[in-house]
Amino acid sequence: MASLMSLPCANLSPTTTKSSAGPRPLFPKQSRFIYSTNSAHRLQVSCASNGPETTETSQGKVDRRNMLLGIGGLYGAASLISAPGASANPVQAPELDKCSTATNLNTGEKLDINCCPPLVQKITDYRIPPVIRTKIRPSAHRVSQEYIFKYNTAIDRMKRLPADDPRNFTQQANIHCAYCNGAYDQPGQGGLDLQVHNSWLFFPFHRWYLFFYERILGKLINDPSFALPFWNWDNPKGMTIPPMFDDPKAAIYDEKRNQANRPPAVVDLGLTGSTDPLQVVSNNLTIMYTEMIRGNSTATDFMGQPYIEGTPVNPGPGASERGSHTSVHAWVGDPRQPSGEDLGNFYSAGRDPLFYCHHGNVDRMWTLWQYYLPNNKVPEKKITDPDFLNASFLFYDENAQLVRVYVRDSLSNLAMGYDYDRVDLPWIDYRPPPQTAQARVTRSFTSAEKAETVFPITLDRIIRVMVPKTTKGKADEVLVIENITVDTTKFLKFDVFLNDEDDDVGALDKAAYIGTYAQIPHKTPNKTATTSIRLKLTDAFEDMDLADDEDVLITLVPRHQGPGVTIGGIKIVENPAPATAASSPSS
Image 1 (cartoon, rainbow, N blue to C red):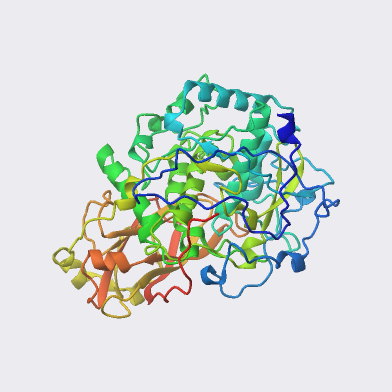
Image 2: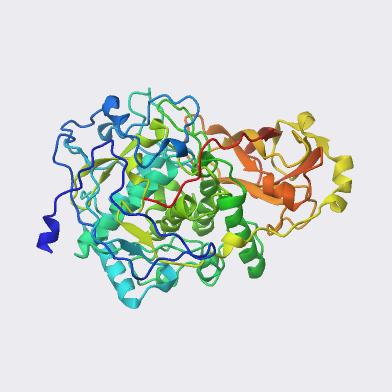
């Protein structure tokens, strides 16, 4: 192993986006997540930059002249997506010496814990080590006893590290607290909070977070091939908390979970409250199909809206973040605790080892969406706006060195040295059957008010409104729910249905279900935030034979208790034709 550790670092500059990994394999079938059993596995070794990228200050500024170079290569002109109004001002890594007390997002009160990391003077721009063998992250429901022992040993050793070691279990949990609960400000932005949720930073931040967490665990058990498990909640065989996390004697157990949802309870990705496990499973598969395929027209619909330097509030979560991701947090969080700890609150989520397993599957969703979904369904899959690519974060690596990382270096999981165990994707073909709704909405068509006369409204009950379409025929149209003003200290969720008057709002496995909005409590300066969401209607119009209708009925079903959401308006707009070519599964 000594020879492996002496291998040179990959020659990647801070602006390089070209991957060192080879072409990505294609699936022989769309309904399978398959890897070639003959492909060579490669082992990744650790290294950090010791070249001119090293910054000796407590918080260096990145030279934007350098950041804006070298954005070609992987991102050819034919596959670019740029957000309008690109400012060349990406969100910068936080200034650790200005870290302050975090906030309990469920109450708005300051926490009595310090989420700030240890301070050092040296920050190194991180360079991903050469990939010698790709680590395969396993499905948590299919791991061996040997793996379970190894994983528990690593977590136990992490918990035994000195309290001031940045690799310590609590210190690692505090990373999520500091980045998500208002401990950091955006550098040079007059006290504006830095937040990595509810925007296009969501996937890259958490990918880097798991990347270093995994490497720290491997270092502690002297196994650089160690890979974190993923909770396969998108497959019926994985829709319970993985059994290895439910052993009270294990290091990876956390008492602060909803005891009603311990195995064999089936995770409810829709949080409908249905008590029929078969209905819940069917709902879950419909939700996955909707948020991964049916409901997105653009990359930012899935990834999250642009978040740049100076943004005062979070612009809006993507379909995956506000859907299955948020539901699992809320479903596991302990209602006996004051603020839904552990998984149900951002500040405490990292204290539950299940958090990293959950986010392993969230990261897997990004990988699947990037490379393995039908391009004719989701044609735009890459964001190349420099404000996205050059956003940066700070982490401590497995050697306790403080490193700066960039979004642009996290776009390929293969280039980062890991991939996922093959698991069936039953949701990929789970398009709801056609549903002719004309006969079932007669009453609402005559009684529902027109949208322009209803809004703004407080969503504390089921709301049905008539919304005019833009055109007749098969236009590519999008439902925009705008000026969603939320109380950010509360868990909030509502579902959206099209031409549906079914009194069974617990059933989502139908063509009428078109999407959701959900949030875990998060911090904003005034405890409120305003955003909008877009839900693609093209498939829904076809499935419900609505292409030639002039108006449609939109139903909003709150899943939260009481008020907390105000909606400013609803409209249907024609989606512009994609300006880019489909991406290919290359790394």
